[in-house]
Length: 391
Image 1 (spheres, rainbow, N blue to C red):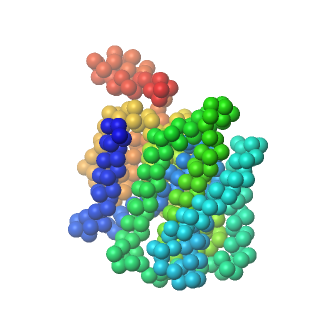
Image 2: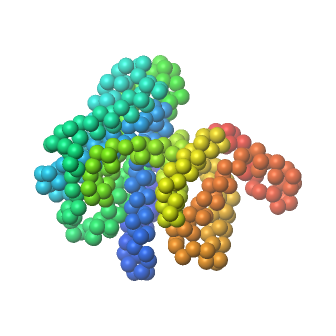
């Protein structure tokens, strides 16, 4: 095991322990209970974005099927628990297995037909969600158009109350998803997926098992999306077709991954944190009706200005990133602009993200005008061409 991988795995363990003790810390410090809700919502999106990126970011197969795999997970648990009386925790693995099996079934069809790629593949995955919605609505064994009540579902006592149970379950599955994305990213499978993304025919000619690797990526994507969907059925309370099989989940995971950066496993994690925070604050400010417009406009800006995602820029400009984030956080705390910890964090993360939108060429001109680091200019890495930095 290399030193880099060991440090990353130790970091995973440290994050898991820190977040695992947060509910107890929240009670001990009498922090707002809403922080727990905000965190488990964030972890839901971290898992969804990371699982989507295994297929689209790594293999280059753009998918709108996230809503389908999520929906299969939601309905698998809802039917088993709400209609057949299964224990909630016992039903969760079947959510991932059912979604994974559906993903592999789709893969057998589309990956055998080479012409079903690119835009055709994306539209095919979008159609899957509509087909599943119709099946669920027409089948009394699944939904029948009446919906399924999940309110009052018994939760094992060791998980705590409802909010704590949701927090612990989403934390476990989010960590598993991100860990899987990391291990795939730095493995033979990940290298093969990147080769497929760059040029599938060349990868095939070089001996990459293209079909098997694409099936693995699609299966992992569907499995983790369905697993978290099963957990989320408890949060929905009343499961309906219109609430589950809609375009919101795939659009949000696309935005999160594009914002953070699809070429690195940390990109979707960062993107999910930013978008969840921004969306939460817009909704809290009474701007829920226009939040979709604002977030959609952000996607357009990102597509034009930061095609590689903000994570790589933050990593390469880590000094500037830390200075802006903690500087803004300290400023809003001292000025007491808001009484909410989430709002303070939102100001800091938005300011940092906006700073990362500045093209590297601008920083280069600023550094040249100020005579470089010796005369107070920004760090040299701010002026590096991103293409060179990424290589």
